[in-house]
Every structure is written in C-alpha cells, then in structure tokens.
Length: 448
Ligand code: SF4
Image (cartoon, rainbow, N blue to C red; front, side):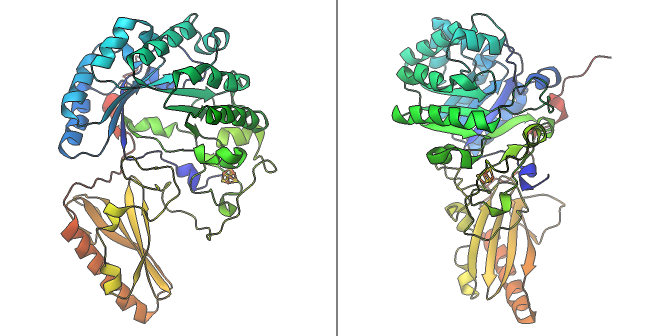
C-alpha cells in the first residue's frame, strides 16, 4: 500500500507553528494530539526564542502560529507573544484555540492587544448538543461561541476549523450557517486523521459515501456566502467544483520529530493515472483497511503528463509569501530559478523543471534527449556533495538516456550549475532535513 503519499511530510514555507504546550481543558474525542499530551512537552521558551530570532535576522515566515493543546491556558503566553511581536518580524500572529478562553472579554482584549490578530477557532458542531458531546465538556460550545463574538467585536481575523468525523458529518452545512454572520476569513474542514486508533475502534472515520455529499453541501453554502474554504485529507475527485479547496500543506511546525512518526500514511489506487496525484493524498491507510479502496467512487482525472514515481515528498506550487502553496508543482519558483538562470542556455540545454519541497530543490536539465537532476539540500559539514555553497550541498542524480556525447555535455553543465549556485547563493535560502525541528528534549519522561 505504500506509495509516495506514504512519505508525505506536510510543510509549507510561509507559516511557522510553535507547539507551546499540550495541556487542554477540553477532551475532543478525535484529538490528534491526545497521545502527544501525555508524551510531549511543549517547546521550551529558549527554543522558541531561537526560532523567532532566526526569523528576525533572516525572514522566512510571514506568520507565527501558537498551538499545542489549548495554548491560551499557557502561563507564559504573554511572554511568548511579546517576544514574537518584538523580535520575529512576523506580519501576523495567530492562535489556534478551542475558543473557550475568549469568552472572557477582558482576556480576549488583552490577547488581541498583545498582537494576536488571527484566531483559528475549532468549531466542531453548530450547537451545544453536538460540540459538547465531542469536546466532552458541558458548556464548551457556549463559551466558544461567546469567544468568537468577542473576537469579532474586537475586529480580529477569524478562521474556523472543523474536524470531520461521524459525530458531526450531519451538521456541516449548519456549522457554515452558524458562522456566516461572523464573516470568517476562511473556514477549514480537516478530515479526521487516526493517529493512534488505527483500527477506528472509536468509529470516527466517515465513509466517503456520506462525507463527500455533506461536505459539498457545506462548501456550496460557504461559497454562496463568499467565505473562502480549505479542505484537508479528502480526495479531490469527490468534491466536484470545490476540488480546488483542497490544500494538504501544513506549516513548518516546531514540534518533537517523533510526532510525525505517528502521522497517518495515505494512498490512492489511481495515483499513477490521476492528474491530481501530486496534490491529492487519497485515503488514509486506516480508511482503506476499514472501508476499502473506494475503487468505484474515486474517479481519477486522466493524466496529461506522464506519471513518474516521485522520489521525494509533495512538491510546492510556490514558496512565494502570499502565494498559493497548494497549487500543483510548477515552474513558479523565481528565487530558486534565479540561482541557475541562463546556465542551461549557455550550454545548449534547457531547465525542464524546478521542484521544491522543504528538504530539497531539484533542477532538472535536459540536453538533447538526455537529462540530469541537480539537487540542493541543506548545507552539511560532511555529507556527500559535489560542492558546498553558503546554504546548500549541491549534488546530482538521475542521469537519463545518456550516450557518450551527452555525458560530456552534461558533466560540463552540472559543473557550471554548481558554480552558478555557489556564486549566487547569499546564504539566506533555507532548506531543512528535519520535520519537527526539535528532538528528544521535548519528550516527557515517563514514570517508572
Ligand atoms: S483518483 Fe485518487 S489521486 Fe485522483 S483525485 Fe481521486 S483520490 Fe485523489
């Protein structure tokens, strides 16, 4: 079942998320950090400061998002906010929250005035009966709703997040109807990811036969109300005209590396036939194990480009701040392209593609019928490399269809490309091999 989707490592360039703490006063039945709450500590203030300082000196992220369990409960919240505001050079500061703490108007105002301009609020039901059942806390819906109204009155940017499970699939359109008057900047719908309960003993995974029509109705309603939407972990081919709402990217997250070991794997039977394959994740392995491949329901969009098993993770459409990073891979990476601009032409070759993910930038050059990939990865001190530049290790791979004549031409081209990168790399273009950005220091010691 393993496909390249199984190697999916979510990330995008413009957002940095910091997992401050894993404590929470709700206990949502689907919570994907539930296991993490017992196992992980938040990021230390010192590590956080380092990440902020890095951005202050070499800006990379436009936004910092604080998350964890319920981050508004963190005792040092205002220290974190103050440091991000004064040192990070971020355009936006966002809190990911269950909304409950913001029922307190004075607290909401204090956080807003501390610089948090965006609030990503979980809303899993349109009423107390649904949401309180999911959160397992009576009164949580009323608090969240008051919180949302307080934030709206302050003029904050509101985004909502709804996790799609069997517990709320019947209420998705009603959630949109409820939220409409708040004019959120975006409503997000994330399909439930089984992080621990892979056999779905809790019965939270919704069959696509039920989920897709309910979600489409909710997206229709949001569209009619002029509310932008984003959908994660739902097959694009099931969303009709809303397929473009699918955005499976995630911010860079300062979290323990191990968190991603638990991350579900994805697969689609039609991957090699579908035009959406580079953006759509298909189904989780847990879904396939429980409910099957959905062979008849999933309808691939016939590929117009030949399928090639990707060697790396999902590639980005763009890394430009404000750009749409969910787009299919394209040539739209001007900063990266500029590293090698003109080199191919000078050697009678052409730059066929630029593929970028958080770990590497791959330039594919074609010379006649032959081709070669020149790959940039984060600069190391000892890894194998043709050349090290200020930011990168430069190497090459995938010599294709090379005869003796082409071999010499490609060798010269690769050398020239490496020299060009070395000359133009000023040291501020970051690639990173790590996923979680912090290691074992963020694990809680288990007793006994
Ligand atoms: S066929 Fe598979 S890859 Fe294509 S859109 Fe559907 S689920 Fe995604």
